[in-house]
View 1 (spheres, helix red, strand yellow):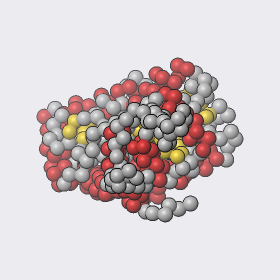
View 2 (cartoon, rainbow, N blue to C red):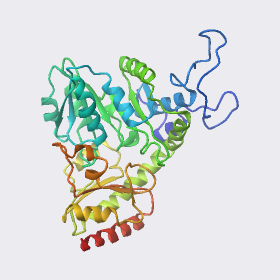
View 3 (tube, rainbow, N blue to C red):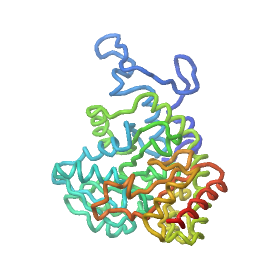
Length: 386
């Protein structure tokens, strides 16, 4: 079923009607832990803010609308959302995951759930056939990131999900959609069972909150995840929910500008002699450029690059930028730069998923592109002194 309104309209209005009590146009921050009950069990839809809060409900309704799903659930962080999905598993279950994924996810997989008997297997994200070939009768979950973090590789989501739907028993397909956001791609429309986000990133968009989300159209999954959300209690506070709602209102505008800047930055980097390779799905040189055009509205705002001179040059570059702030995270209006091997993906260092120490990851912001390019230009010049 097609939504009644376009994405940009849903981002501003979905789940966000004027407040019935006051007429406030912006969703109020219901900064309360509990709610009055007229009699035992007789209330106005809310009992306790861990279980449900009106500000959080507005955010969850909005997220569901943006992903084209029936149920949205908000969490205290992207990792809390990831943990909720993993809580669906049992000892002996098998998970097929892409072999280029966020270091925190890998850490939770291998140092969290593996010790309870869940088996994880990692597969080339770009090979849908190989992903499907690794599915066994014990496989309960297929975990995808597209684009991946940090190599910006893509998975043909529709091909993987179509293959899974033909299997019995059918594993769940969960797509971490943080890099793309629902504005650029909607995994549920491509057959996924779950779309997951760190709302800390592009959805919030201003580096001033931490949050996570899951969206699904499966009523049984939604019921189980809602139980876990309440039972475990890793929920966001109303202020963080309000901030995500505020950020979402400009998501479409920001993502278009992020992508425009990232494309210019990536093209500039391809022309620099210090750079061995640029990873950006919007470049014609990217091996999956056609797939990016097929399943994404644009290629987004993340760019990675590998330096020919190795890790010392990479460290020099990330410590020399002036506009690009050396920091973990991504997706804010400001540009960030980091060294994944030593920062966001340190947990993979001694594993087959280890990241090249010469890889630099950029979260390209919405500043003037020419200023960002000048900053990278001087930082690359500085690597000659290494």
